[in-house]
Image 1 (cartoon, helix red, strand yellow):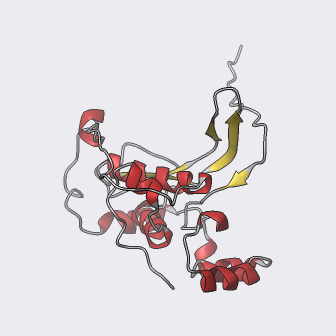
Image 2 (cartoon, helix red, strand yellow; image 1 turned 90 degrees about the vertical axis):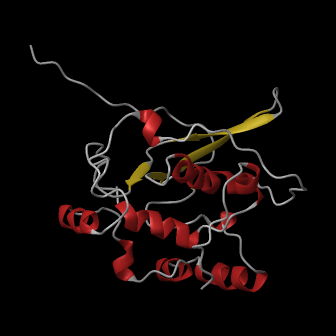
Length: 206
């Protein structure tokens, strides 16, 4: 007489790829870097230590799941909205204002740039309260429609501050630290600009 529930993910057809994660990793093809730095990173991509060096991470930086203590410390940090219990009304959380790119020519557009731009988009459109990361899946091409789209699975969501603490996203939610980790490794491309997103000024060139 006990009712059981099962969660089943759709089988994705195509070449499965990890586009980013919840601690600042960016897929190599999506890294917008000078040629000299690309060559250095390609030399390191064959080993785990080298990959972490590409991201400016040491061994301790590889912890992907947060802890309850870390979450607690994170929420004690001051911010404009930390003391506001908040209203979970979606209209308050998300910005539905339509944005348009400035006039100009946009040539720096690649398929691999779209997942990173999407993470950036979720941060901006949630009024900097949330960010969707850990994007993985396949790029599906529809030849008949002359179009393509991403089918993504199992993402992580970072929540900024304690204002929306009722919204729990599990142990992969690294809060402000996860958001900052993404912003430090995300360099905007023309895809971000086509979406009307503000330039990310926290990107660091190591």
